[in-house]
Length: 338
Image 1 (spheres, rainbow, N blue to C red):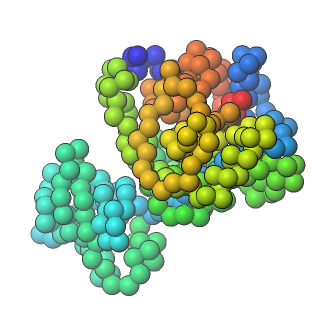
Image 2: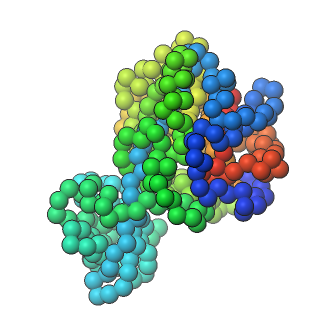
Image 3: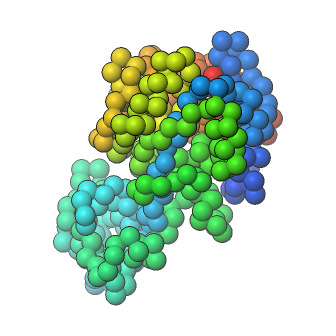
C-alpha cells in the first residue's frame, strides 16, 4: 500500500501553536463507523457519547525535559534529545551536530552534569552515559527543556500544558496528546456516570514524529517504545469487556499498547517494548473506540486511525475538518471514533 494514499492538504495556519485556555473546550469531531456519519461537538460533550460500563483507557506517561544544550570538549555547542533510558545512567539519544560528536566525545551541561558518547548506532542515534553529582531527575528538571514537536514554533509559557492532568510515570519524549483535552473535573464527571477509567503506560519516543520514508508502507520499520500494564488495570479492562462495555482508548499510544499485549482479546499485564505497526488490514482485538487528535499526512498515526475507521472515511473526515477550520496536531482539536 502506497503512503501517498494517506496524504491530505493542510493549510499551515490550521496547525495549532498554543493550547486553549480550557483543555475541554476544544472541538470534538465524532465519527460513527456503523452510520458512516460525522458530527461536530465540543470536547466536554464526550460524556454524552460514553455509556455506563464503558472503559476509558488512558496513558499516564509523563514528558521529561528531554532537550539538553551543552558544550563539547574542544569547543562548540551540542544539543541532545533523550529518547530512551537504557539503565540508570545510559540513554539512547539524538545528537546535533552529530558528525562532530564521535565515540568517547564528552559534552558538558554545567558543573553538575556531563555525558560521554559511548556508541554510535546505525541510524545515527547515540548511546550516552551521564556523569553527574546529585539526583539525576532533579538535575534534568533544572537543566533540560521540554521538546515540542517541530511544527510548533511558538514558545510554550506553561510547561504543564504539554502534560496530561493524569501524567504520572516519567519517561516520554513527547506527550500523548489525545489526553491533553481531559480535565480533572471532566474525568470526575465520567467516573460518576459509571465510566471505568483504566491506566497504562507507553513512553512516547520521538520516532512518533519521524516520517514514513518508504513508498510501500509494508516496508516501514516501526520504532519500539516501552509499555507497562499493571495486573489490576488489565483486570479492569477485561472485566469491562466481559460485561459488554466498550474499550475506548485515549490516543494511538493506548491503542498500540492494548493491541500489542493481549491474548484472544484479553489484555495481559506486561512491562515490555512494542514496535507494532497498525495499518489498514489489521484486525483489532481489544479496542472498540478511539479518542485522538488530527495527525500529520502520511504518518503512521493516520494509518492506524485508517485501519480502525477505514481510509476513505478518515480522509473524508480530515477534509471536512480542514473546511470547518479545525485546529490540527498536538495542541489542536480532537476526534472520537466509535
